[in-house]
Structure formats: structure tokens, C-alpha cells
Image (cartoon, rainbow, N blue to C red; front, side):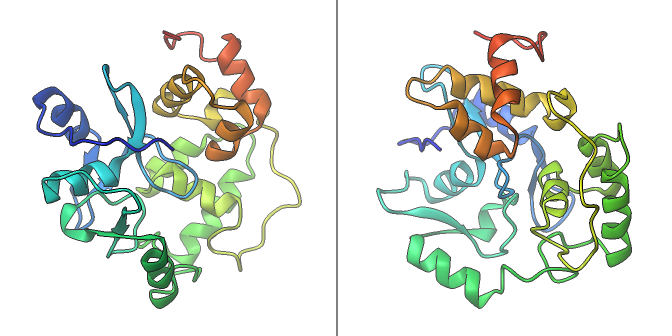
Length: 227
């Protein structure tokens, strides 16, 4: 993940694009656009910067009025990775972030996890939907009012671990429904970044390298610009 070295939300156009991707319905301001598998939102900076950055980092830097320094990272007081509410963010370092994860029991699963308003029954229904061929993860996310990254966390057993899952899931190899258009645009931007490896992008988005290669070659998502 690339980090930028200056603030960007003072630019009206950048601020407008950023704000359009935020849901302020609750106390947490939830990032609605592309996420990495951890649930953190990512934001594409237009030229001349032309790179992908963490959305919550952009929000914190704007709040502080300065760029984060080397070794600093944006940490969540709410422990909700998709949140970009500046009041829930503070600067810290890797050690502080690790301590926070333990003290706030970030790795607990079930109703206490950051997928706040999901119930045990909701999670069971989501698993059943994930096991149904042809059902899109983004459609499930919209139905339950959570991010697509949250659905992926459930599918991979990173949350609600106690709920039984099928031995195998319906095949989605090469299926464009595995990714949103925002994620595909971010992937194309990464593919156009010198030194970025397909395998690293695949791990970042929790998909196979074949899916990334198909995007790169234009076999899938043909309507999305490669420039």
C-alpha cells in the first residue's frame, strides 16, 4: 500500500470525490467504496499523484492539518476499519496499534465484532447466501447494510467463526462478481504502478492471481478503462 506525503482534501474536486464515498448515517462514517480484505477503505488519488492510499489516513491528515510522519499510522479509536470519521482517528505507531488490538479485543468474533449490527441469525443467513450459486457478495452486503469486505470476512471465517460453513463454496473463478467496479479500477491502477506484482494484488483483494491476470489482459471487466 502506497502512502502519500501531503494532504489532499483541501482540493475541492478531491474532497467531493472523497465525500461521495462516505456513509455518515451512523456514528462511524463508513467508507462505501473499495476496501482491502482487512476492511480498510482505499482511495485513488488522481494525477499528478496517481496512487492508491488508505481513506482513513487521508481523513486523519486533513484533521491534523499535516501529513503523517514516517513511522506514524492512522489508528481507529472505534476499532472499525471502514470508518473514516476524523473524531474516531488518531495518530499512532505499529506498537500502539498492536496494543489497541489486544486491549479492545479486536479479534473477538460474533456479536461483539466490529460488524456491529449483524446478529447471529444474520450471519447464518449470509453464510447460506454465500453458499448459493450465482448470489453476488455485493448484493448480500447491500441487503444487510454492511461493506462487501465484511461479507468476505464472514466467508473466509475471520468473523463469526462459530457458524458452520460448507466444505466448499460455489466456484467464482474468473467471475467478475467477486470484485466491485471501484476495486477493479484500483487494481488497474496498481497494475499500472511499476514494481507492483500480480500475486501481491491478488493477496490484497483476496482473489486468485488468475482473476488479476484476466483484468490485466482485458478478458474481464472490458468496459473499465486500462489507461
